[in-house]
Length: 73
Picture 1 (cartoon, helix red, strand yellow):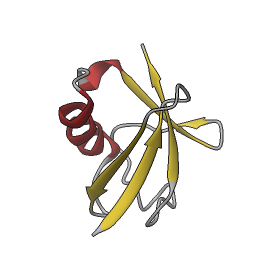
Picture 2 (cartoon, rainbow, N blue to C red):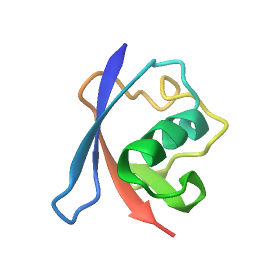
Picture 3 (cartoon, rainbow, N blue to C red):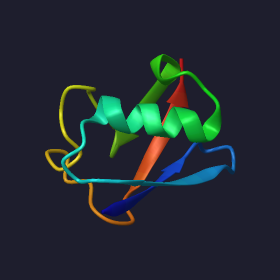
Picture 4 (spheres, rainbow, N blue to C red):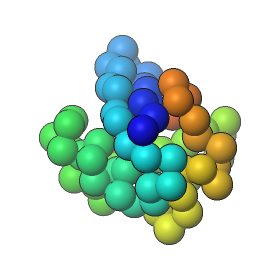
């Protein structure tokens, strides 16, 4: 179990617990429940790269206490 920190750059930071082998799409669904925004409107980035829904967090080298940037469509 890892904890990922999602920052929307407007001062809101959310901590999400997940598994490192979870898909980004599944992670977005958990995040959407916590922040009240539909998962389809969430875009996550790490280091300027947009995370694709069908790839696992582990493949993007997302580990415990990694920061992800949150954008809305």
